[in-house]
Image 1 (cartoon, rainbow, N blue to C red):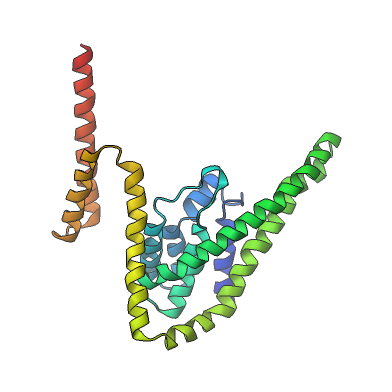
Image 2: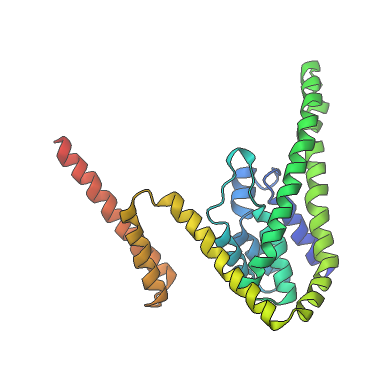
Length: 256
């Protein structure tokens, strides 16, 4: 990985963080650019391998598809898992399943960075209140937007850059010496992790046992019948519309 690629990927790793406002705030920066699927596309464009970048990003995204951040409590940093994980996977040439195994520890490390960042900012709040009471607009602006973003840049960009620029070659060397049997084990585990993410999502969405039927039909259509996912998704939307409209009509008749 060259210097420019490492800088650009690290910059997006910072810009797509939950604490940065530059790409439209949390609603766009974190919930769009911070997702591993989008990260895989961006990293793929930067590294010149869009297809594998999207495949790896989508595989990592499947693991975190049910992840939420209630009250800022972050179970795993999906942004750094997506950007740094995809970049390392592309630079080392590993499979998408093995890329998930790389992304998991990166996401956990990113969580510790977030907690450290939030802890430091909690001390800055008291000084910010003093400037607000004094009516010092210049320092108030610096304490609410300037200083926190400087800290965020240091905590986000710098570690990502060091890992990507200096660690990519080391990662390649490590991959070369890993025995085939261990690679096979890591690949199997990595292939199971996205299923865990899907299970978390299903637990949130399936409020009634009968709804599991839609998932089973879709699973069979994709795996056994090998139908395109987009086609199955359209059929699923049509079935959901029919079910919703029938329930609505049934409710209207009861009131009548």
